[in-house]
Length: 112
Length: 112
Image (cartoon, rainbow over all chains, first blue to last red):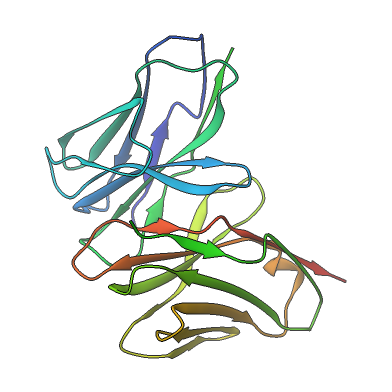
């Protein structure tokens, strides 16, 4: 079996700050995803990557950047954190398309 | 783009009864429909899926039905148990597309 590791687990930042979340997977999966989970709004897709160095925007990409420099890692940057923003960011991976997603434990963001 | 609507935000059933969670989708090209479970304080994990070439799939107490004409799919949990209490998310994606779109989630409570 494999595992998806998200760091940090908790991230507290200041308004306007640039904040980066990291995700590592050892499944050797091609595709990786970043979702944002807000209470009552489900999961919204921010960015996904089909392979190394590929980036695709999701429905919620504004205000975020992503980077996939290695097959095993996928980073997400909040370019300018918004005050009172609180959400859980979930990283996931899958082998190719239309296949099962495996999720990390999540990174909880709080902006003061 | 694709939208997935999950109709019940909360559902309560008595232990031993069946629970049904309904989802609809908008993109007629959608062909893969997975379901995920999120237990309290944990991340999501895959429970069952169905592809558009069949209209019914069963895995132990879980049954997924797909009505392509109505663009509707549903998760049936039979003989519910306390450990079935969780948030369930439906999702959809199209063939040869990597974008997986989720519904908002249904919080299932199994009452003793």
